[in-house]
Amino acid sequence: MLLEAKKLDKSFNGVYALKGLDLSLKEGEIHGLVGENGAGKSTFIKILGGVYTKNGGELSWNGAPFPADFGPVESRELGINIIFQDHVLIPAFSALENIWLGRPYPRKGGLIQWKEMEKAAQKKGEELGIHLDLKKSIFQMTPAQKKCVEILRAMMSDCKLMILDEPTASLSDKETNLLFSIIRNLKAKGTAVLYVTHRLEEIMALTDRVTVLRNGELVSTCDTASTSQKELVRLMSGNGEADSKHMMPDSTCCSRSAATQSFPALTISHLSSADHIVKDASITVHTGRITGMFGLCGSGRTEFLECIYGIRRISGGTIEISGEKVKKPTPVNSIKKGIAFICEDRRRKAMIPSFTVEENMNLSSIDHYSKKGLFSTTAAVSAAKGMINALKIRCTGTSQPACELSGGNQQKVVFAKALLTSPSIWLCDEPTQAVDVATRQQIHSLLHHQAAENKAVLYVSSDLTELLEVADEIAVMASGKIRKIFPNKNLKPADILACCYEAEREETHENESI
Picture 1 (cartoon, rainbow, N blue to C red):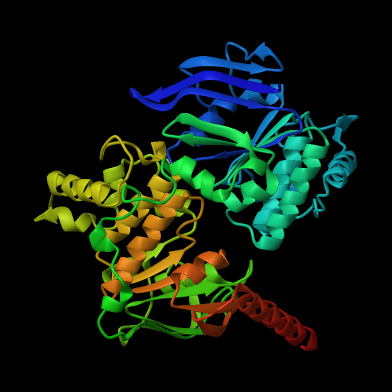
Picture 2 (picture 1 turned 180 degrees about the horizontal axis):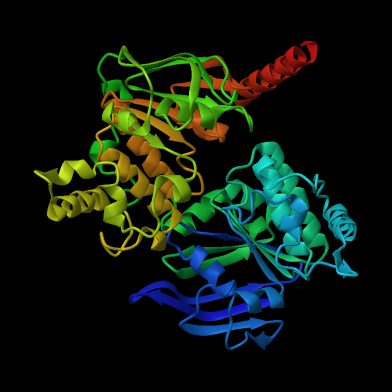
């Protein structure tokens, strides 16, 4: 057995993150690891990476105990490489420079042998089915290409265990299929892969075995072929279906049919961004409805929301909120006008990880707790406690640092921050990215409730199935323009994808003719 964990324990401030965990990995095995947010997946990964020290239990590698002073260096020396959801790359460096980062450069007569380095990287890439322009800077690359750079960097050393944490969170279907091909090549070379994801369909399609964690404890390890998505959900949640303990309070599960008469809340006309990513985009978002937005990678979806909110500079077009024209959108003015923005990158853009849960929740509404220059800590803490209870956030209290929470609970903190501003318009960019099934349902429930209260929701997602479940209509964006808006009635994924690809072809022909 390549890796064995026996009775593994890890606690923080007396609260167990892992308790009595038994888990094993074989050479050349793709092993899935699933569980709700807070189940202990990230804690286990960080112990294997030498970031956390275990409190109890045993870890062995090829039958021998892990080194006593086990840290990140010792982890890499064993052949363990972790590719986290957030890329650990230097944007200004080329792919080649990032691949060789931390490794001794080959030299001859004191000169760095760049051609030799490039040949070595290309050879390894060919073995794995990875084809990259190694001279390209990281900031010019797609999320899938960045993921390939990290995999290639890991495989340049003697990698025996590759750990992938939510690797497809920002990838399109085509890019996901490419990644799967690379992972299968790793398996064929005898490299073990620990695949951590909330996307159960990927677990079923890719893995040999799957381990389910719940509340830091092992629930089950089984052959993937002998289980099902439904069974995995049952094991993760404790009873299969998403029961009341996972859902928002009953009052939030309203039907949108209860909403009053719909009217235009947000009207965008011929909007263009100064960087030319968004080009002449128009849409109207109504109250009492969830308007979905879909587009292929690079379509301009995120940039469109950033223009509306005031993060990205616009060069043309108009934005109207409830019929009132916005002269120059800024985040502060957007909040004042009732817009909440749930951005795609929660860790870097939506929260301050070192701040407490309460401080993060009140970042956008801090002025609510000030009177005559005096800040009321009591009122701020009380508001945060109310959100913790309403959104069922798993934390030790309002003073716990947000960085200690699981990804799903961090996302709930981001939603709490937005709710405390009492928004009337929601801009949501991949709001359920890398969260578990139960949290995903909670977020859907919350937004359905907001729509039922006659709020407007613009919901961007790269998951077509999700959009078809949530949205009243779906707008298709391609090459910075909104091409078509489909009513969500008997709508099929193929209809939306066909519109995307047709729009891309038209744009290509237009550019070629210029």
